[in-house]
Image (cartoon, rainbow, N blue to C red; front, side, top):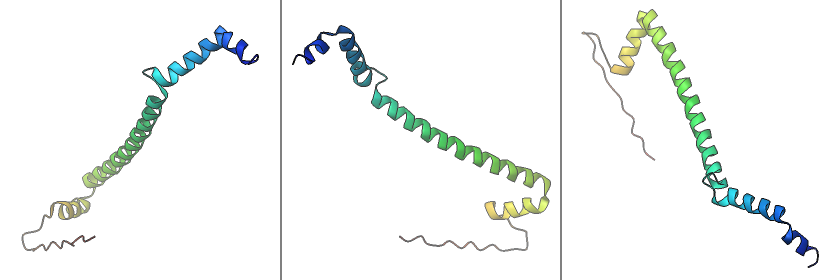
Amino acid sequence: MKKILPIIKNKYLLTIIGLVVWVVFFDKNDLGNQIELRQQVKQLEKERNYFANEISVITSDIKELTTNPNTLEKFAREKYLMKRNNEDIFVIVEDKKN
């Protein structure tokens, strides 16, 4: 009891403890909010990396399509099901069963 009494009377220590409790629990930038924001930043960085990769793939596809006419024909046939006048196209769709 004699050891605890001087600690309770120390106004600087009580002030520091009070500020720490306030910052961790009651402030608008509390600990829970900071953890949530860090998770959101990580998710946004993953999305940024994904879209950067997609942009690079699409850019290389565009470059290939503008330079090579055979690639352009292949792309038109695969993506848009285009055909020549004397051709028939059969689209096979597989059932996705769980």
